[in-house]
Length: 222
Image (cartoon, rainbow, N blue to C red):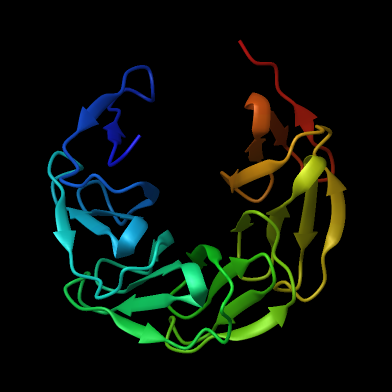
């Protein structure tokens, strides 16, 4: 479906559709606080809310390429990333966007900031890192899997096909193979803290760790 945004105020028991003011496919959402949030999607779409998602306004990104991921350092500074190696940076809450040199033409699937300086951006053929708040990017590895999540500046996880999960403890330079104990492709991964994380994938597969990825336990589905 196109342009759909839903909101919950009771921990996911109920979801209410919001007016997104777009018909484009939307790929990622990021909230800076309870009121200010951003969404990115196809054809350069970037949306912003300042009232907790009740209303969304279109920001002008200046491009028509698909944008897959968005992450903010604070209420003003953030990046969006997408097709053809595009990474755009803003320092004024999305009013203006500037192109940065990523060094790749590959589709960037995810971008994440750990603090005001350090961030990562992942594509299937390259893992990028910034130590300048997104102004400059450099390659640290030739692969980052399907999805990527860092719990701190050095420790991160990547998902792949047939239940593959990998872990790095040195900022993406080296990766240790783990098994999600599922056979489906794992499309997204998220950690609540350094020990507890979830990965989800095809056919409703969900797997969970409570010890930093040493063991992954498939979860039952209703």
